[in-house]
Length: 195
Image (cartoon, rainbow, N blue to C red; front, side, top):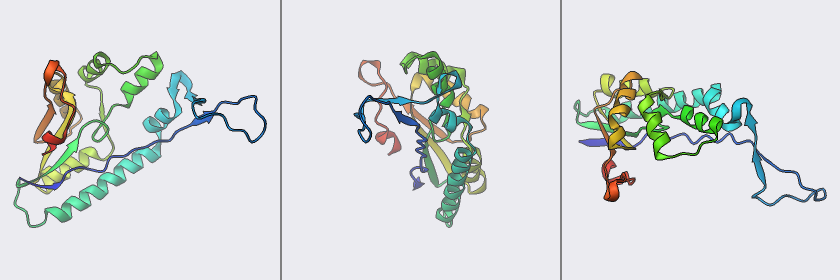
């Protein structure tokens, strides 16, 4: 199978609101870099996470990126027979939005752990990112390409991941979850799966 696109540009959105703490130093002195505090929105959610979850700009950026990706795939797919080419995408923060999980951690003061992540995945509550459903539909149904998903979600969480993807109408042909490696830990290197 010929790969027309190995990834969709990921958005790295950092609407940071990091404010230096005031020190007793005189005017013009700057505090050392480790002395920062993150502004927090009501409910304990950092402002940058609040922005990511609620801003019109974030929605517009994702929608625009996916529209541009669809245009690029249309051009690249010309002259290729149906189902002889594929688009390969990551899952988390590319087509599924896990910001609710991050908000839960922020509100409760919890840290990421395999247990909290697995519980989040089993909730099947991640929503499709703006533009992702339309993009996958364009690839599969309009251009007759295939969609392959590569994720570091472990094999034990793969069934819940697939149920979440289906619930969000995210169409795909194959998903490659992280296989179990030595000691029962998932293999985090995605490159062999991308290959």
